[in-house]
Amino acid sequence: MIAGMLAAFAVVLAVALGPILVGRTWVEERPGLGLFAWHMTMATVLASAAAGALIAAHDVWEPLAVFGFRADAELLHHQYTGTSSANHGWNLVLLVVVACIVRLGWSLLSQYRDRRRDAAMLRSGITGIAQQGSFGSPIDVTYVDLAEATAFCIPGKRPLIVVSRLAASTLSARELQAVVAHEREHLRSRHASRLAFAQGLTRAFPAWGLARKYRDAVTLLHEMQADDAAAASTDDRTVVSALLALSGPSSGARPAMAAGSAAIRGRRLLERRRRGTPIARLSAAIILTTALIPAVIAVGPGIGIANSGHSMDGRAEVVAPQHP
Image 1 (cartoon, rainbow, N blue to C red):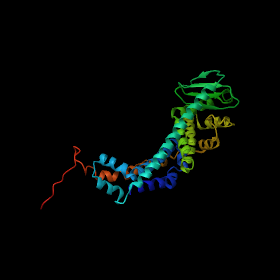
Image 2 (spheres, one colour):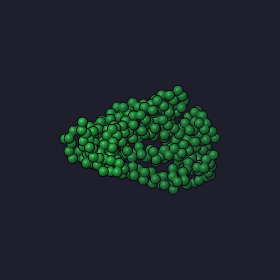
Image 3 (cartoon, rainbow, N blue to C red):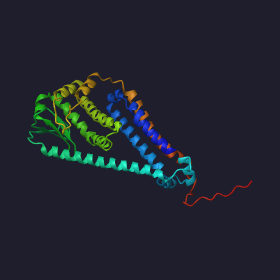
Image 4 (spheres, helix red, strand yellow):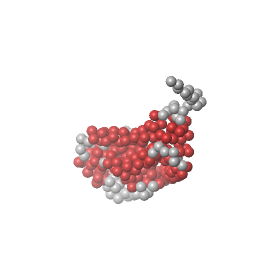
């Protein structure tokens, strides 16, 4: 059955193939492609499972497929089930998946709502502004009195980069430039929104190991992508020295630049090889090709019998008997 093939593909990709395709070495060497690989892998797993459940629910799928492919219903049923013993019990599969989709949707809405609320609270709590500067960007850079050397950004309609006065006095001018470039990249690439999706997926399915790996990988790769933007603005060693200066304790409520992964990121900048582009691009191409497999499985049989059941004006075709 096509539904079984899609379900099996989703399981294989989630359990075995996915972790291989998003291998850590090349992903960290090219975080932009690494993020693409993770997003595509997770989207393919979810789409395969949802498509398999939809096709398994014959009472829902077959009327849609008959309309979409304009195909004969019996021939279409044979193409997608391979047997006439399918019964309405398969519709329960779709109900389970719909329940999972509703759960995921609610978790994502809650995650985005919490993110906006936290950003609003953080923005309103910033006091003691000393001065603002642009650093060549329309995004405001605000210096505030905090007990720690830290820097972070607040997304929103009017994004904000916050640097503590202690950090500003600790960092050199070039290090401060790297810090601002790092936070600017977070805002430019909308990392907060994309991380919220990964966190919402984990929140909906906390027992799903791949979802937890996805969330952790996205968190780290966002920081590495921002590090690369900062290094392009300055250089690798300047970013590393800024990380070391800001790697003290920081509040869990703020996405500080050096929170949690400073050692890994600093080692990457000092030791990274710039020869990984061909492997990274090849891996990304393989992942993109893999993402097309569920679509081929799902619609291939229908395309093969398209226009077999209806004429162009929507009436049933009448085929005259052939006589020798």
